[in-house]
Structure formats: C-alpha cells, structure tokens
Length: 445
Image (cartoon, rainbow, N blue to C red; front, side):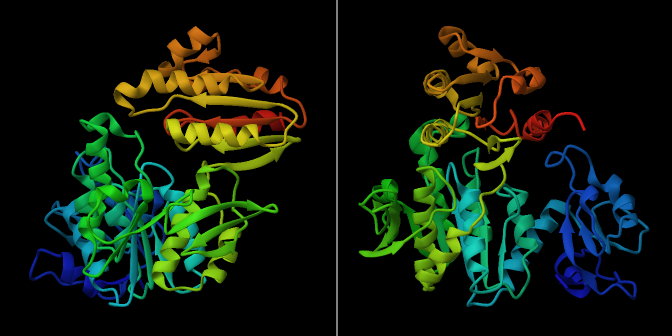
C-alpha cells in the first residue's frame, strides 16, 4: 500500500469532522491524469493555470475507472473524495510528507543539467536496484508538477530515491531542490539550452547550481569539472577528460575505462557516442559517493538501457533507425552526428529537427548544425528555425515532419542504410514521427 487512508486524511483533509467510509484501506498509486487511472489509485485533479482544463470535471470518470480516492477543492457528495483547500498544494504537501517519512538512512539523489538527465537517472536506477529498493522519476517528470508527483509516489521503504529537476524559468530549481531535499546533488552540465528566459548564460549556470541549496546537512555535491570554479562548498567532479576526480579513460587495446581516484575500471558502455562518457563518469561518481561496490556497478552499467528517444537504435528490413527524437540542443546534435559518422553503415541519412529555446543563439546554432548535417549522404531539415540555413546551403527543408512524404523518403533507402532522427521534443516526439517512419519502412500489412 503506497498511502493508507488515515495518512492521506491526516496530511490533506481540511474538514475536521470528515470521516472516511469503511472498506477503503488506502491507495496503490497517484495520478493527475484521469485517463491513466488504475485500480486503487488516488486521483488529484488540477486546475488552470497549472492544467489546461479543470480536473474536477473528471472525478466521476476517475472513480468509475477504479480510483479508490480523489481529492477535491470543490463541494462534492462523493464518499470517495477527500476535501482539500487546493489540489496543487495538496500534491506538494503529499510530496513533502513522502520525503519526510523516509528512513534517515535513505539516500536521495537530485539530478539537474541541460542535457542527459533522464539517461543518468535511468542508468542510476538500473544500477541501484541491484543494491536496494529504488524509486525514481518516471519519464522526464522534472518540473513543478513532475517533481512533487514523483515524490508523492515514493514508497516509505525506499532506500534509494532518484529525481530529475529541470527548469526553463529563473528560480524554479531551488524550490524543487528544497522539496526533494537530496543527500546527493548532481549537476550534469550547463549548456545554452532553455536559455530564452534567462538574461545570460551565467544566470542559467547559477540556476542549475542552485540545486545545491536543497542539500541536506552533510549532503554531497557532484558536478561537471567545468563548473568547479563556480562553487565554494566541497564537491567532487567528473568529466570525459583527465582533470576530474572521476573521468573517462580513452581506450587501451580496445578497452575503455573509468578512472576513480587513480583506480582504473574497465567499462563496456551501454551505448555509442562521446556524450555518454561524461554521463557514465557522473553515474559512477554517485555510486562512489554512496559507498557501493564499483566493480558490481560497472558490470550493471554495461547492461543499462537508453531511454526511448535518446539514441535507441532498431533494424527494420535491414535499415537502421537511430531514435534521438526526444530532444536536441547544439551540443547533443554535434555528439549525435559525430557518433553517426563513426558508425558502420552503407549510407548515412539525417533528419534534423529545429532546436528550441536558444534565444539569440538560434540562427548561428542552426547554421552550424546544418553544416554538419550536409556531410552525410542525405540531409533533411525540419522546422521554421532551419528555413534560412537550409535555403543558404540548398538543403531540403520542410516546415513540419507532417510535410515529409514518408513513402517517397523510404523508397530512396536501401538495405544497410542508417537514418538518424534528432530534434527538439515538439518536432518529432510529440508528433510520434518514429512510429510513422517505422511503419513506412515495414510497408502495408
């Protein structure tokens, strides 16, 4: 049982004479989307401006779908509704209660960065499940709704909690970090991504580093060595070079490795690409900070999955698709294209989606990325932000992925070819482009 009814009532209910009906012991899960309800869930209906529609109108549907309880800030006659003052505040209260009920021995890890947060969180979950009961964010739940929801879903007996913390506006990270109250804070990187709402890159860097404000007393800070000069508290560093406490070691006799305080650990990487080296270094820096067996962690890391849309590859009718459709920024574009160039393939094709939230950096960034894209056998640019650079370099361009004639595109592919798809979330991921491309390659039937 995730939450007992009496605990929900004690933390949330604002009616002193409220009595729970008999027969409902508690909830197994928590949802803020009525369409995701499973038997035994708690439904928390959110309202504008944090939701597009008032979730209270879906309470009936949630209960009909099997929810044990729902919260409501509006009058209701439902016996299975807990009356609260404000549903968002109730979610936050439940998140704080979930954090506070953990054992003092529980390790809670908060991760921020411009790129790679979900990959690092996924790898850490994969490793730490081998050492104890582990709970983490789902998907990329890292904002003002995702963080408290992930916390509220954390079982009381969790030994390792891992949470992503993101931002696209000043001041967001510190409040979320204080809610998570990590024992370990990791700043993976700071890149010119989501910079549109920040006055400068330095302001963005300070926003990411504000993750440390939430650290519990005695908490440990782990960060990219490039950020070391910007912090004053004790910390450990990682990177893909040789200047950090934990770093990647370039292959010796074909064998790559991670170096931790001069100790070399042979490592098989979970996926290709130089950008994953720093992520692997950060991952094992956390393991080291936890005092866990590095040899076991290295073995588990070798079998860690890549989150969907972050470099997964699949072969369909002898054509390889590399799915980088979840997100993109200038650095990750460069890493993905470099990895593609080194990949064995008959021909290499790229479908590049525009990169969002770059502010004044956008024109030059799109021009640079497209210059890299034109080094491959074919290059297709998608989105208005690529329009000018595509016209200047005479690269095929479309306004939206929906404008791509997939039947014609696939007809030009041949067995042994590789296709890389990479762009910001709204360009391909939200449009379910990869499933459409997959189906086009498979053909009718």
